[in-house]
Length: 219
Image (cartoon, rainbow, N blue to C red; front, side):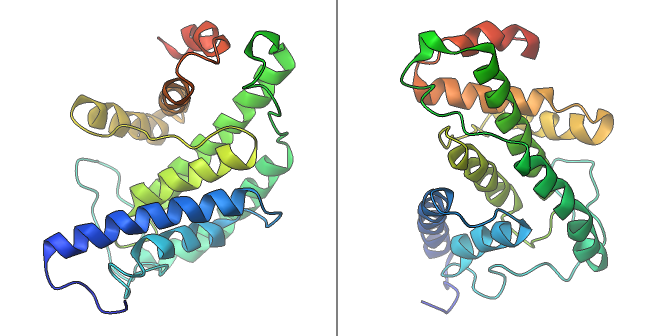
């Protein structure tokens, strides 16, 4: 399929299939030795939209946009490449410091402080890439979906599991406020807390140490 759908129902169907395809892409990519860069983020976007909206799939926007429900004004489209070139070394620097949280899921009672430090680092980097993608807002559509999948790629590459951040009803406001808190105060804790919540839900109480560290995230 290479022609954009002619009705909204077909568009939503193809986008939903695209998210599933992109999830499979990141799962496979996470287990490869390929580097994670902003080009990878672009590939995630392409996987989501190549059948639903081929003319924008994996392509940076060439127009100004406003984010619904947000006071953040994304960089002018002529600044996107410069913003990404600035962020790329920081992403590489963050990734090189990470270790794999190997085996922690299967031995939750034996999680050490060192393991928790490793997990914290993974989540911090996932939150950073998530926010950076939404802040630059490089694509015409699908920046949030792409950012959430990019964060999952970090989690899965380093031994955790991909999550679903709930963004409906009151959770949508919490999600938007978490991103706004970073823009205003450079405070990543609310977004990291959302990621922790997603992990707790996925593991359904297995990783009990997450509940112990929840206090520092205001739970």
